[in-house]
Length: 99
Image (cartoon, rainbow, N blue to C red; front, side, top):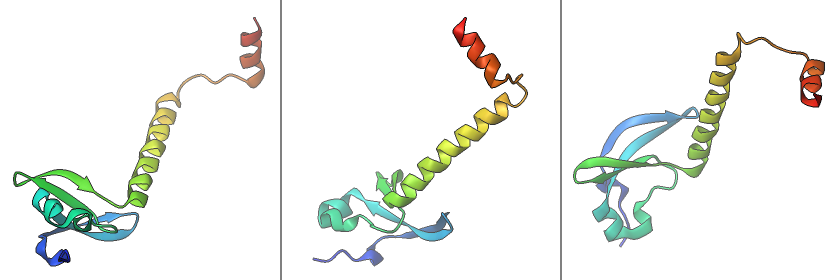
């Protein structure tokens, strides 16, 4: 039996990396019934458990993009927090280590 994508409910669009995704709902029953065919390969979906969203499923390249963006934001936040700190020259840094 083929998994019919029209069986799932459409929910709002999600935009990741300038791509538009239709958010779909997948239930545990869908996974039991259709196995891995129930899981989207290029779409973002909610896993619905007890009538509530439990997890989000997204393509691996989009997940990796989100992780990279979070790491970049952490770096920017650290730079912003330290922008008013006194700077030292490279010579001062090496002289402190030698003492």
